[in-house]
Image: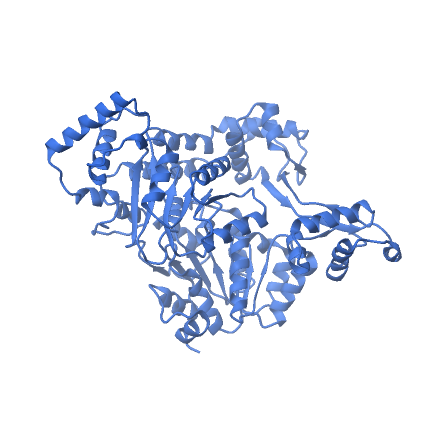
Length: 623
């Protein structure tokens, strides 16, 4: 089958879009390829189509378990053999998947980058017929990327196990420096970059100064831009508070962050995708790989600290090609808050050394000891004990990890485990409730080694198979534990620290330039770019795409700056009269909020224009 016929037969699209065909033909010809495509550009097609046309299996490296599962299910629904390996699977389950990939004629194997260093994975990979390797979110491999992840550096090593397989790297955000670094880190045989324009012709970039409160402004924006929306905030508490407030105002909203259970994340994302929930208030944990094209607005409650993060999050609006808006709220404190993040992310080097010494004392690690030792680490208790601010202490630990002194895993999930504690012949003597017996029979059928050691389990998967809620599975496992049939250890989040080298003196702590000084400078430049985005008078679309190395001489005509330049002109005397009327109304009626201002005889556009001018000129009397 040709590439086009595969696209039409399996995916139902009549033709390729943008640079999809260029990328497909490049990887199909065996060339290492880097594809730069903005959010919504159709990245998955660029590796799924050629993989179906080629012999062997396509290895897909992705950092997101939810995205892997969604893509596997989607491929299977089309009759394509695909599978994935992710955290929580037992050793036997992983082994079965790998064996099937060797002998089962599978076309896709999805794995996380952390899996690549596994001895079992590497030994089995060497026996697979790999057509090519796809690296999604490839900017994560670059130390200059905004979301650098050390686990991605393992990718270059596995190329030695499959030397004839080309690499397809895909990302939606990469500066020219990152583009070069990705190709170097992945060992490209020759430079080969396929670029799609970052310009989104249907997306209006808008920067709006906070007029009353962020909450009221967001409510006004949701009235102005009808349809599905995402509101991004920087912390988990804000997601809950804002979603609750919006619900009280009659807007269907829910919240999403990394601290929710998998079931909660799945249910909320599904409700939002279906449209039963209009607004998703979320941290940056939400959005990557979402399959919803009709998002009409993306609103940022806080200013992101990198153009890459903002561009990717804003780009989730209007993926259907219809008009959409990306609105960024800011106030007089926004620039200062951005600069403060630099000091929080890169605290002074002597402070980092002090955190190292305090950690050693907290974990009772003697001088010269610690090599290879792993200890549970309660960062909240640590910060209270040694009087550290959590954000700074967290980032100090990150720096110590990158510098090679420790390995710091923040709240890694320790998945649920069970083991049978009675003898095999005693099982039949128990009189168990039907529900508990059903769960026990499932474990005996699907898990090996239950009588000798703990086995990892997934309550959600058990419930799905048995047709009962996860909470009921947990209740039955607790019941079996109380009856002394098995021992059940529910999952929990446990941070831990591993000492990569023996404990050294505080004065011996050295942060390499590539870990501290260079990366701090890079963050300073990103912050300055975001401050420039807030204050620029030029087309905001042109400003953003120029950061990614794309030069455009055409204004978008949609952003607030472009619209202001083409806004209808009002007579000066009318504008001055309205300004005085606003000030006198606020004084005489003791108005405290902009929402209380009502002038039925004044066009909304004119009123908004005057208010914005007053704010910009610092003549707005309301806080």
